[in-house]
Length: 107
Image 1 (cartoon, helix red, strand yellow):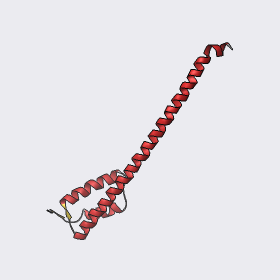
Image 2: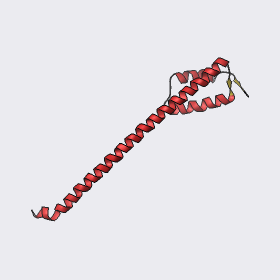
Image 3: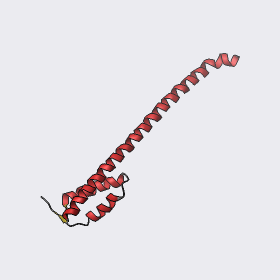
Image 4: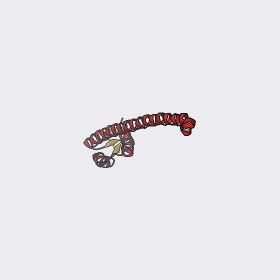
């Protein structure tokens, strides 16, 4: 009984603080998870946009039989970003063929 009388208030304070800390940690954990999910969604969207533009530039160049210097530079930058975001597949194949086309100055 003496123990509870002496330390009861301290124990209750510690338990309340643990509960508050647990709530704060849960809130922070959930916030962080939402941040990660949104970052992954942005990466997916950016990768998809890069892929679409890579394919568009490549189809145009292959149809014309050459690639303009400015399009080649854009293509290389897009492709580097696409790969950094984990892209692969069709865009890689079409990119490899397109950069081998003759290069011309257009304008």
